[in-house]
Every structure is written in C-alpha cells, then in structure tokens.
Image (cartoon, rainbow, N blue to C red; front, side):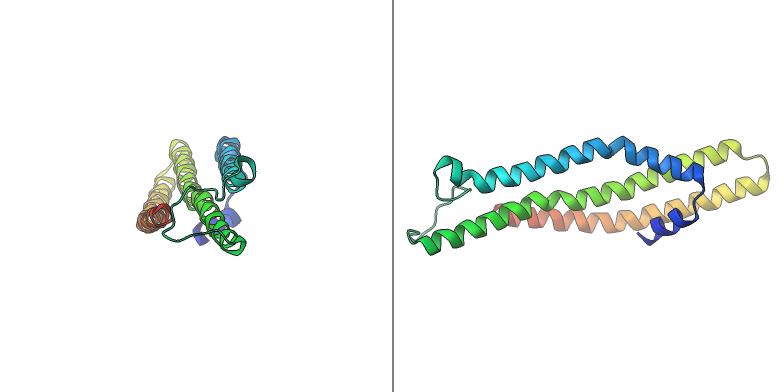
Length: 159
C-alpha cells in the first residue's frame, strides 16, 4: 500500500486520469456487490422475524434450546457468523484494488513506451517495468496467503 501512496503523491495528471478511469470502470459493480452482501446479511439475520423460525440458519443442536436466554445466545452466535461470512468479500476487494493499480501502471507504461523518443526514455521505461514486476511479485506472494486464510475462515464458519 505504501507503493500506491507514494505513486499517488508523485504521479502527474495523466497518470491520475488513468487511475481514475480504472476506479470509475469498476465503481458501480463494486457498489452493487457491497449492497448485495449487506442485503444478504440483513435478510438472513432477520429471517426468524419473518419466517417464524427460532434461528436464521437451520441447525440441529444435541441439547434442548427452549429457554429465551439460550435462544438469544445462539441467535447472536448465528448472526455473528452470518455477518462474518457476509464481510468475507472485503479482502477480495482489497486484492482487486491492488491488481487494478497494477493494470493501470502497465497501461501508463505502454503509453510512455509509445511516446519514448530516445534511449534515455526507453531505459526509464525499462526501470519502471522492472519496478512493476517487483511490485507484482510482492503482491502475488501476499495474495496467496490472504486467499488461503479467507478460504479457511469461510470453511470454518460453514462447518
């Protein structure tokens, strides 16, 4: 993230326009996904109020749950799991932002290569390309662990 912050501080207007183009391209889709996830959390959590069931998720417990306190406790636990699962998409959005930044940087590099007029400018493009490759390798290393953790957490909540 420091890489992105540094780039935003030092980028020129053309580079900011390209980054804004990428942000605008996926803005409505991102908002749609966020709204759908929030609605799913609310609908699942409020299910017992509308469907006259005890809990949002149909689960068999090996002991009786008849007291109001036990019902509230298990309802709260299930709502917590629903919220946790519903918010599980957030790491994916963060990863998408990191990859969008990389795509935008590659597009900027393509434009600079097309406009390069001398050897010094081409060498500058090569250095920028190497910097982008280094950034992508760092992201790749980080992403695989985030995805592993996300999948393990989702599976543990489902089980």
